[in-house]
Image (cartoon, rainbow, N blue to C red; front, side, top):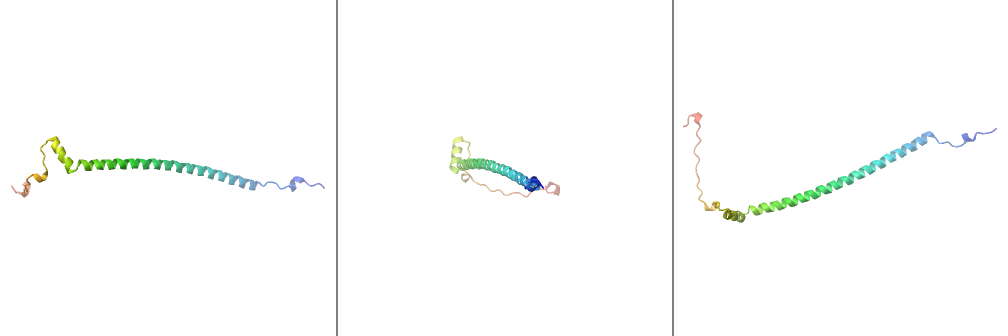
Length: 113
């Protein structure tokens, strides 16, 4: 009797082939997701670097403006401006200060006239 040689050979099982294809598909999806996330992290880090540089510029400008404000509001600078503009203003310590007492408020509707 002659045996069928095809039956004796180990055939590839479809379930095992399906499992390997599924594993390969999952690995491909994971690889694409990894590359996507890696590129996103790179883009976000570049954005963060640009924003940090912008913040440093803003802080430098702020410090420069604070220095200008401090210089412009110093007593010596204010006196120089008063002399330069010649508008007749003098320092408060040079004026006579008069304290006036407030009179009681009059309430027209209450009958105080």
